[in-house]
Amino acid sequence: MDKNILVTGRRKEAVARVKIFPGEGKIIINGKDIKQYFKREESIFKVMQPLVLTSTTNVFNIIVKTKGGGETGQSEAIRLGIARALVKNNEKLKPILRQNGFLTRDARKVERKKFGHPKARKRFQFSKR
Picture (tube, helix red, strand yellow):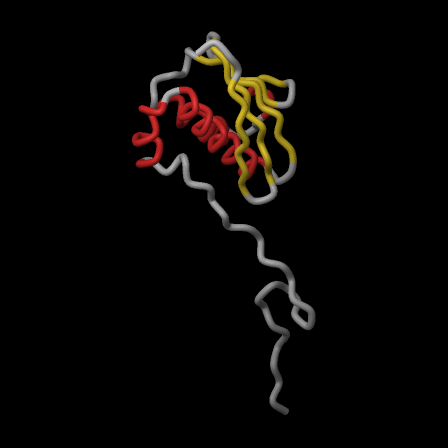
C-alpha cells in the first residue's frame, strides 16, 4: 500500500471520515490523540477492536474527522470506518471482520416523537371516567 485510503463510517447521528496510511500506529481524532479525545476506556477499546483482531495495531497511522452524535455513536462510527479501510487495503481480512460484525452498519436510530404523545411511544394516562 503506497497511498492513503479514505472511507466513511456512520452510527446513529455520528459520521466518521477515516484516513489510513502506513505508519507506526498513531490514531488522531479531530486533531487530538485517541486517549485525549475519548474519556471512557470502553470507547477506545471499541475503536481498537478491528486493529487488534487483524493484528495491524502498529502498521497504520489513522486520522479521523468525526462529527455529530455522542461518544458511543462516534466510537462505533470510527470502528466501522477503520474496518472498511482495512478491507479496502487487504481483501483477505474481510471474512474475519465480517464474522465479528465490524463491517455491518448498525442502522438503528432514535425514533421520532409523535404529536399527541409525550415521547415516541409513551402515551398520556388514559382515564375512562
